[in-house]
Figure 1 (cartoon, rainbow, N blue to C red):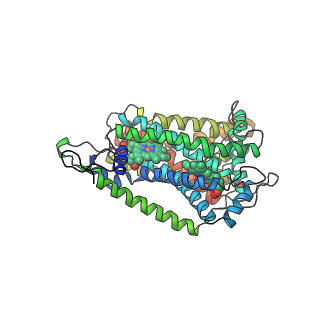
Figure 2 (cartoon, protein in one colour):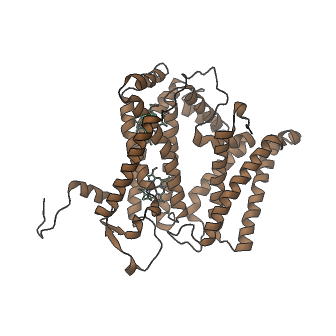
Length: 430
Ligand code: HEM
Ligand code: HEM
């Protein structure tokens, strides 16, 4: 064991590496599992697993229309552990989308996105986008019917954006249709550019967590804060979570097989043709709302709103306090349930009873399937927010949190409707 002049043990190189990621000491309250649920760390580990399994997959994968599908079939049947590695990559990718979203929810509702953490929220949102880009570009690579048509559906949605939609869709596809150029574009993005950008973003993200003084905690008297050593306290916790995650992934990857349908056939679209699961909310919205609203106005407004979240004029922020206040908690739970049920009921009515496209056909589709359903959806929510403001004295922080909750809950509801309740011709099966 190496000792310094005063006889103290010097840290090993592994310990030194850990101390580059973490400070030597942290507030004891940060160790409580329910503070972070370990979600940021789980995400980082999933990324490492994806890089390793992805690099192994690259040995047998061939990114051409002629060979992509066959290379996956060969990987699954002829290569030792080929199926297992593919399953592991597939499951980790799905989990990363879910865990990233849960981590976003955790940081948001525990009031960890304001003031000195605002910049990290912006990095986080860009990382959420990159997780989606990684998953989407990977989705096409097996080149089966599922992959081909899911990517076709999404690039068609991009085309709805006026003026720039078509050129952007062509840029993504490398031409007018999904073909060999698209496959090569996606392969290069997926296995080259996106992981490199990710590593940069992750490094900045970790550094900003440290710069902010660690995870957000409620304010207390400084003399009462107990500080503990990261090694071994936090380190053991991280090792335990990592071991559980890896064990769970290994067991699951042994039994669950990543789907592979028949080889992509551009002449035969499956019925229904669905987007990748995380985009299903957007596809659902497009069924009911004029493309200008569903593919342009709403995504733009929601995107700006999320980026602006840390910067509204708040008067009473309680950093590190879940839901900011007791009223904030009540409003969040209430609005999550309310918007989920409301979105479901309205979708059902639009499908079976409210035929605005026929009733107002003479006034044009912009009015009939755009403005009318848009107002029917938003007016009750405006009244709802008004109720909380006037009856319960809700402040900006609670109102903004409720709007965020409504948006996320509605999206999840639409995603589930599309995933579980839509069959042939994208018609509702109930
Ligand atoms: C954030 C990181 C990543 C995510 C979210 C991700 C996601 C995905 C997804 C969803 C698929 C389709 C899998 C399937 O349907 O079975 C896929 C396939 C693939 N990925 Fe990744 N991936 C990531 C990183 C990487 C890296 C770093 C590489 C290589 C350097 C890689 C190489 C591949 C290859 C070769 C395939 C085709 C094989 C197959 O479909 O089974 N991936 N990826
Ligand atoms: C996708 C890869 C991501 C990785 C690897 C990652 C990793 C981490 C880690 C390790 C932490 C510190 C501990 C923890 O909270 O668990 C953290 C904190 C944070 N993350 Fe992420 N994160 C990712 C994505 C995101 C996303 C999508 C958002 C939000 C849009 C986000 C926003 C934040 C914020 C605001 C903090 C500071 C939290 C606090 O101070 O309590 N991150 N992240």
